[in-house]
Amino acid sequence: MLRIFLALLLLLGLQRTDASHWSYPDRDLDEVFPSWGGICDTGTLQSPIDLSITKSLKGVFDELKLDNFEDKQSGVTVVNNGHSIQLANFNNEMEVEGGPLRDEYVVEQVHLHWWSEHTINNVRYPLEAHIVSRNKRYANVTMASNFKDGLTVIAVLYHVSNERNEAIDQIVDYLDDVKDFDKINEPVRMKNPFVVRQLFPKLNGYMTYSGSLTTPSCAEAVTWIVLSETFPVTLEQVDNFKQIQNEEKITLKNNYRDLQKANNRPVIVVLPLDKSVSDAASPLQLSMGTLFFMLIAAKLL
Image (cartoon, rainbow, N blue to C red; front, side, top):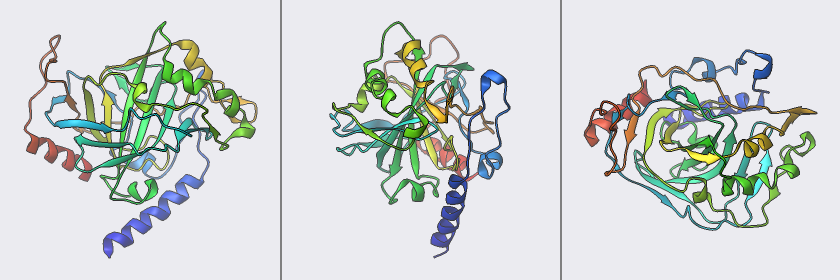
């Protein structure tokens, strides 16, 4: 009963935070990043953070499984929610399991940040996709946000290339339909099927750590899985997202949160068996039991 009571209190707090207006600064004008309040300002497990493969602990987990990610999803919707471009309403349920996860997670939505939120070796990339999944133990994302194991987010970072990204182009095709201020929260249905797996054609390792949502409520309920290999996107493709309006006649030029303090959280890198870190000191090898202990300890801080 106490657990349920505390969850309800947290739920009410999340609703109050989500209901308030929040925004990103205009970095062209050197605006200071605003205070979002609550745990966004006081939390100790906040995201995003800077990542480094060579400074991470090397871990060995069971295979990370992405079930039904290669399915052709029909009726996917694209929406400008005033803070990002989001894809949702997948007709075939996609699940994430294995790796650092102890439960099955179902994909709820995909959204984009321009520039990237996470950095790798202090390098910020032009685009980052977040594939947000909910622990199937909990009924919805709001409820899952109340628990340390509630959510997992797969983050895909994109580097500048002359090669157009076909999956990103499929999203760009609908931006004119949703970009204006008067179209906020009015989803448009994709005419052609969308394959989420095409957002990251390879899976060559990842870094994982315990963190938070990067938007209010900033709930510290996320197991992050940041793919260690970046993927191509053109600057022209990214520039299309910068035309999205978040206020009347005002465009959302960027929607990334400032880096947060790591607070000595362990970041664990998981590499393919045939891949090693040869250009720097090898990360420390840990046992499965130790890895789970460190992840759980980080969530309890």
